[in-house]
Length: 163
Image (cartoon, rainbow, N blue to C red; front, side, top):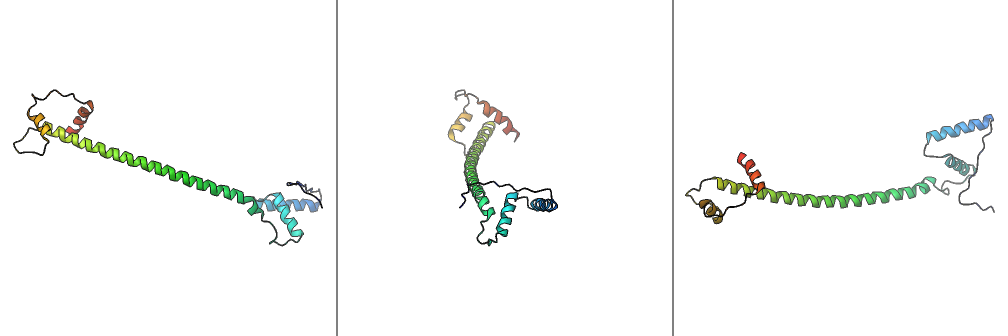
């Protein structure tokens, strides 16, 4: 019996006769209609048919050729899903941290606004819910040591005055 190598290349010769030219035109027409098939695929199908091999015994060239590609696609899709999941989890965590930071900053700005508001008002005889150290500082400005003015607070106070 003849031993074939794993990949055997055989040539097909089309002679300049009418029959061969007609066959070649049919082959080209058929291949144009099915661009996913090659001349080799078409020859193999014709050989299977001419040798009268039942379709149940024939190997499916599409399945054999596309199975590794489909597996690679499935693996890539799985990897992409894992990457997206990790990315969105990381971004979600970062977003939560930013939201917490913004909440803290807005609370600090509100506290600063209250302090600036209270310092700009004249103390009234009605007791207010102001902490005693703030009341002492506003009631006796002479006794309090001079405080350094924070540039951030001074810039924020300009905006808060507009409210």
